Length: 117
Image (cartoon, rainbow, N blue to C red; front, top):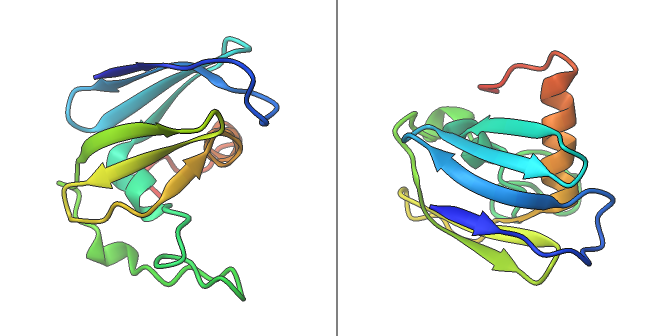
C-alpha cells in the first residue's frame, strides 16, 4: 500500500509518500526529505479523535492497554490535502491524523521519545 501525496496542504510540511513496511510499520517521506517510521500500534494509540481524547480537556481517554500490538491499518485514505483517515483492524475508523499532527509525532520521536509509546 502506498499513497502519493499532493502539495498545497495547510501544514508546514507535507508527506510526499506513505507506505506500509511489513505488518507493523508505516513509513512517511516528507517534502523536506525527512523519513519517518511509525509503529502502527503506537499510531493507533495516538489517535486524536474525540472518542480517544476528551475534547474539552485534551486528556487521552483511550486506554493504551486496550490497543493490541496486533492492530493493523485496513485502509488509509486522504482527507482533503491536510490529513489521512485510518480504518483499523479493531473497528476504529474515526481518527483524522492531520499532517501537522503526524509531523509533531515524528518530531517527538526524533527527540528521543519512545517509538512504541
